[in-house]
Image 1 (cartoon, helix red, strand yellow):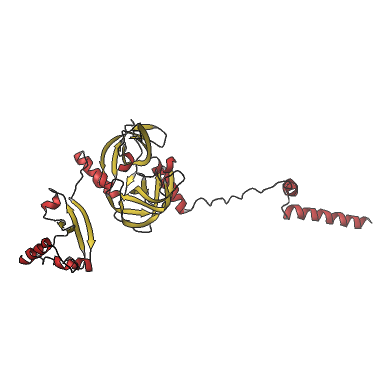
Image 2 (image 1 turned 90 degrees about the vertical axis):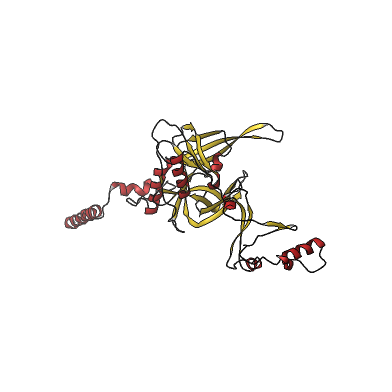
Length: 362
């Protein structure tokens, strides 16, 4: 019996040694099933060393660099109600600092008609702003604040080399939510849009980056963190508050337009407002151009010319009244159009007949 007991004891020791040494058994592993018995969830597993993707890190870096130079703009406009009582109305928008001295670029419609403009920096400090100059045709305004210190500022890029499909980022204060970042692409280039003051904004950048009320005047950046546009307008759906919300169609003014005005302001101290003096034009081609005795390849038909304007000095002419209509004036070097062909057959008045004879005699 003793040899058999000795062999059994050796087998037990050998099995215990294999289980503990080769199987990597520990006391914690032995009691782990007991400790997790009453737990209702498991902890997340961390993938060490994964970090952020390249595109994610690019977004983060651009936001950290340009967030500090993006500002919130509050303007106060005094209006009259139905009973002619004056009341203040607050508007919000965005802007961005372009140099350490506190010069700020934004949209003209953000500050238009305002008596008091306040700029809030990313550190929540507020400063009164002075409007240095505006350009209504480009919906551009230049402001300045006196912070008493050097301020962070953005880098202005080049909007002439943009291509459809490239990545863009927008930073602003939509609905007053400060420091909001959205991303998208350049959806199209060269868009035209009617401005709030009846002017036409041309050459706009279209983007699907979410832009909402409060984003106006904020920077549109490329993947290098350079400002390539000023967020200006959107096509939007109606929200519960009565404002338009983003549906993925936003527009930005190219930054090169603003750079031209900035250079002019720095050299002359003001922003000029050049005008041509043409009130309205239409593009005509094909049959309509042929009916007007113009080249069928197409051209611009001028509706009106302002007296004393550069267009009038250059010899351009608009439409002239003829009967109850305004007919375009053809080029003198071309054959005058036969106005008689424009009237339906039937009895004519003596005035029209006399007009026809005078036209024939010429």
